[in-house]
Length: 611
Image (cartoon, rainbow, N blue to C red):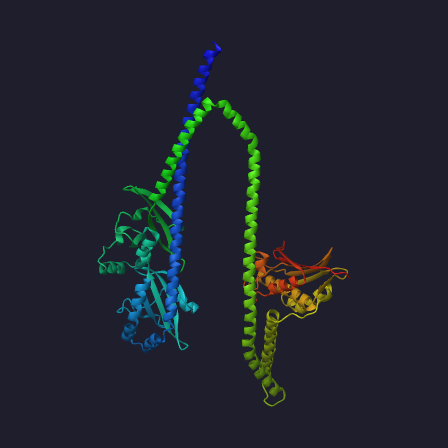
C-alpha cells in the first residue's frame, strides 16, 4: 500500500476516534449534570427549609417580646389593679374589654387571664371567655413564674390549642395580688406567617397531649369537621390552606424528627412542591409536634433546568468546535498547548502570590478594625465602671455609717456599763462593726482604683521581697483551704521599677484567683507554686495552680473587667483587670496557659533594672 493511500485512512480513523470520544464525553457530561442537578436541588431545598426555620424563630422571638412588653405595661396599670382588688368580675371585664380589643386587633393576642395567687391557683377571669373561671391553672409557664417570682414566657400546649404565653407576677403597692397572663394562639397568626414565608403551613400535635372531648367541642363551635380520627397518632390543629390534599399526615414519621427534615419533593400541575417539617418544643423543652411546611420550589427547578440546558448547549457547541479544531489544526494546537504548559506554572505562581497578598491585606484590615471595636467597647465599659463605682460607694456608705454608729454606740455603752449587754450579743455587735469596716475598706479600694489618680511613687523593688509580703497577706487562706504552697525564688535580688503597693496587689489578686479556682476544682491534693526569677533582661513572676484551669478564650476577653474566671461566677471580675492595669502601667506583659496539672499558669514579666 502506498503512502498516499494510507494517509486518508489514518485521517478518517482519527476523525472517527475524535468524534466517538466527543460523544462519549457528551454523555458523561450529561450524566454528571443530572447528578449535579439533583445534588443542587437537595442543597437548595435544605437552605430554603433552614431559612424558614430561622424566619420562624425570629417571628416567634418578636411575638414573645411583644407579649412581654404589653404585659409589663398592664401590671403597672393601677386602675386595673384597684378593680381586681375589689373582686368585682363584671367591673373588671368592662374596664378591660376595650384594652383587650385593642391589643387583640393590633398584636394578634387571643388570650388574657387574670389569675389568683398561687395559694388559690385558680383563674379569676378570662377576657376571651368571661363565663369560664374558677378552674385550677397548671400550665408550665404559670408554675415557672411562681417559682422565679418574675416574668416567664414560652410556647405551651393547652388541651385544644398551642400558644405563646407570658405570665407576670402582679403587685400593687408592694402587695402580691395575683398574676397576669397574655397569650397568642399560633393558629391565629398562621395567615400572617403564610404571607411572610410564602408557604402553606400546618401545626401537627401528638394526640396524647390533647383532650378528645374538648377538641370535639371546639370543632363543633367553629362549624368544622371533627378530624380527630384522620391519623391514629397525630392531629392537624391548624393550617393555612383548605386544600386537604396538600398536607399529607401519612408521610410524617411516627417518631417526630428532632431536627428539620425534608419529607418529599413532588410535582403537581406543573408545580414542584417541597414538604418538610420542623420539630416543635414547648416551654418545658418537651417535643410535642411539628410544624409542616409546604413550599413552592418551582423557581429552583426552573433555574437549575435552565442552567443545565444552557450549559449543555455550550458544551455541545464547544465539543463540536473542539473536534473541528483537533482535526484540522492539530499541530497548531500542540504548539499552543506546549507554550501554555511552559507558562502555566509561572502564571499560577504569580496569581497565587497576588491572591495571598490581597487576602493578607484584607485580614490585616479586618483584624485592625476588630481590635479598634474591642478597644472602644472596653473603654466604654471602663468609663461606665468608674461612674458606677463612685455611685455605689456613695449609696452604700450612708447606710453602713448608720449601722456602724449604732453598733459602736451599743458596744461603748456596754463596755462602760451604761447599758450592760449579754456577752454573746456583744460579740455579735463587734462582729457587725468589724464587717462594716471591711465593707467600707473594699468600697474605698474599688472607688480609689477606678476614680482617683494614682499617686503611688514607683521605686526599685526586689520582686522576691514583694512577693513574700503579698503571700503573708493570704497565707491564712492556704491553711484554711488545706492548700500546699511553695515559693521558688531567685538566689539574688531581682529588681524592677514599680510601686510596692501595686506589685503586692498584683500578686494578691493572682493568688486569690488561684485559691478560688482550686476551691471550684474540689481536688483531694491542692497546691499553688509561685516562682520569682530573672531571664536575661526580664523579671518573671510565675503562679501555678491545679484548679479548674482557664476557659478557651483570648487574653483580651480574660482581662475584661466584667469577666470572672470562677465557674460559680464568684467575685466581681475586677481582679484580672486590676492586674492588667498595673502590669501595663509598668511596661510589663501577661501570659496565660492551662498546665499539665489541670490548672492554670499565669506569667507576669517586667523589664529588669540595673542593680
